[in-house]
Length: 177
Image 1 (tube, rainbow, N blue to C red):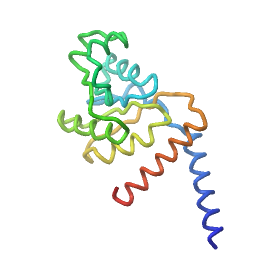
Image 2: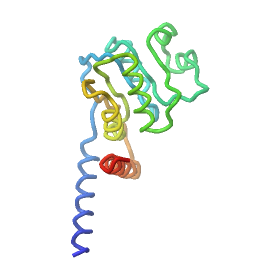
Image 3: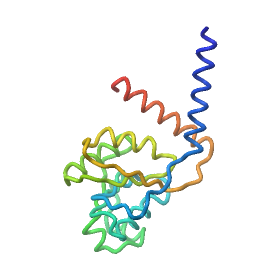
Image 4: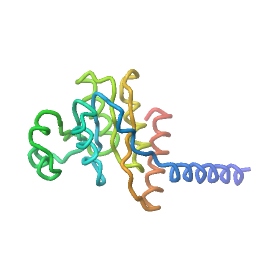
């Protein structure tokens, strides 16, 4: 009996992983306008995507969550070839978060302070499921969340690690942790 239960769990886990890995989220449509953009720092392409969307006027402001405390706005502008005026007017650097869950807390606070009704979340395709889950749980129910995944080429080990983190996060939320 226990062997059947373990076998069923393993089969469900494997099937879930296949769906997770084969159907990674895609970039959102460019035509979508939102009040704000939230970029969760990490792998390459995320900040570039957020700045490109801001330049294209797809949102009013951009929060880059999880920025090292030592990074200053002019340094960010220089590194990502962004005009100082754009950074000064429309980009907020979040220095409080250290992981996905605290990124979501930081972003939800920013959304609430700015009274935004719609947000575009920018993160890597392999990271989107967990990031979107955490952020959606912390946002007000009336905030529309658009997922905008940055395509990447994750390796198998990275996908396995992220899938397990996602499952553990869902389980923790289910039991109230």
